[in-house]
Image 1 (cartoon, rainbow, N blue to C red):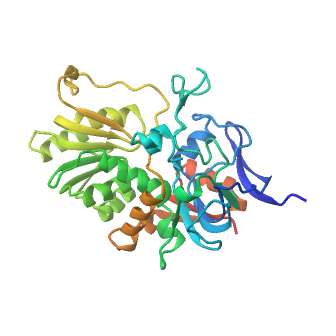
Image 2 (image 1 turned 90 degrees about the vertical axis):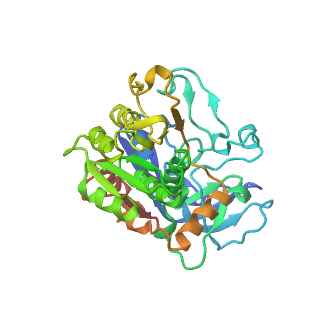
Image 3 (image 1 turned 30 degrees about the horizontal axis):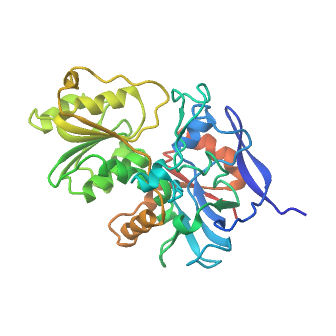
Length: 366
C-alpha cells in the first residue's frame, strides 16, 4: 500500500486546499525531508490569486525546515535524522546558469506565450518547490540535488529562528547586496513586510548609516527600527519623496530597495535616487511597469536598476544561519502566528488578507 501524506495543493484560482498525496519516492540524488516547520510567502498568495500560474494539484510552499527522513544512495555528508533547511531556490549546480555565475536562474526557459503574465517567460529558474515540483506545505518534501542544497541547522537554533533563511532573509539580503551599498550610504527601503524588513537589516549589515524605511503601517515601521532603520516614514502621513530629499540635502539617496511589487513603490524608489544611484527591485510584479522619465533623466542619469531572485544552495543557507547564530539579527520576531497544517486554509485567509498584525505564519505539519 502506498504511504500517504497531507499536503496543501493549488486547486484553482482562489483555492488552495489540504489533500492526501503519496509520499515521494527518493531518487539517488534526492533527500526526503520530514517538514517540522514551513510558512506562507507572498508569492504563494500570488499563486492563490491566479497571478502566477502553477499546475493544478501542485503542492505549494517553498520554505522548508525539517529532518532528513531518507537519503538517496548518491548523497554523501548527511545523516538521516539530521535537522536541515533547503533554500527556496534549489539549483542544479551543473546547469549552464550556475556555471555562468547565476545559480538562482538555473533552468529558466521560454514557454508558450499565454501560459503566464510574464510576456512569454516563466520565471522558473532554480525555484522548483511549489512551482515546478511539489513544495513544502506538506508533511514531507523531496529535495532535489540534495547534496548541493541541504544545509544542516546549527545546534541551539530553533525552527522559528531559521525559518526566514530559505527565502525571506535570502531575498531581502540579496536586495541589499544588489543595491551597491557602501559604508556611510543612505538607503531607502520601500515596504516593510518580511522581505523589506530583511532588506533593512541587510542594508545595516552592509554598512549603510542612514536607512529610511517606508510603509503605511506604524507597527511594521516600529519593527523596522529594530531591524536597523534610522528613520521611518509613513507614506499616509508625509510626502516620502519630499522627506527623503530633505534628509539628503536635496541630493537623493544612494540606493533604494523596492520590496512590494507595485507601480507606485517602483516609481517612488526611482524618484528618491541621486544621479548614478541604484534601484534594487525585489517585488513580484503582476503588470507592466512604467519608469518615470524625469527621474530616469531620459536614460542619461547613470542609474542602475537590478532585479533579483533569492540565492539558494547550501553555502548561501550556511552563511545566513551564521548571521542568525551570531546574534547579530533575530528574525524569530517576524513569526507572528502559528498554525497546524490541518488549518492551512485559515492560515492563508489570515495571511492573504493581512489581518491581526501578521508578518509570517509558522505552519507545523506534526
